[in-house]
Length: 197
Ligand code: AMP
Image 1 (spheres, rainbow, N blue to C red):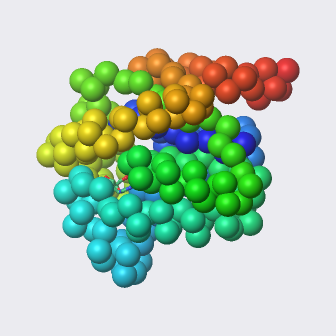
Image 2 (cartoon, rainbow, N blue to C red):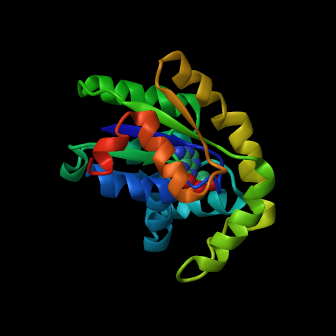
Image 3 (tube, rainbow, N blue to C red):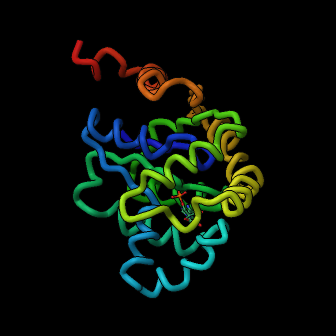
């Protein structure tokens, strides 16, 4: 299974991706996690990305497309993957499309987590307090405001992009975490199987 998770910062993409990984034997590919690892390791990409990420802006398309292209070649991604935080622009979506087509692969779905923006700050603050090793540099009110603006302008249009391809599945991300997981499984048509029935 090859999936995309769409939703604003704080929508619960990471949490749901972890659950999908356990249930469907696929890997979670979070470009945010990969970039934070690059920053922590002090690689060339990390050095370039850090200030951009701290401001809540997007790292250039070419950089993230390159990271994803390398990552999906790895053996653990061959059974399937869930992309969390990628694509974030139409250009990234088109690059992904080209990448998969070239490998003879197809996406199964793009799952959109719909949430009310008014709850996102509270969720981000909660996450900031729970992150081992301290909060992320961009989990603060100012960076969140920027990340939301960027989401609205550059990432939200992807819902239409995937809808036009017949891949969009929209789920209510305001529901309790377990309920959201059930809704995702239902949207993917794997509810009973995943529950072991
Ligand atoms: P995330 O963990 O998905 O919230 O990502 C944290 C930050 O990493 C974002 O605010 C961006 O600066 C950067 N980032 C992650 N994924 C992408 C992407 N697909 N395109 C551009 N920048 C990204």
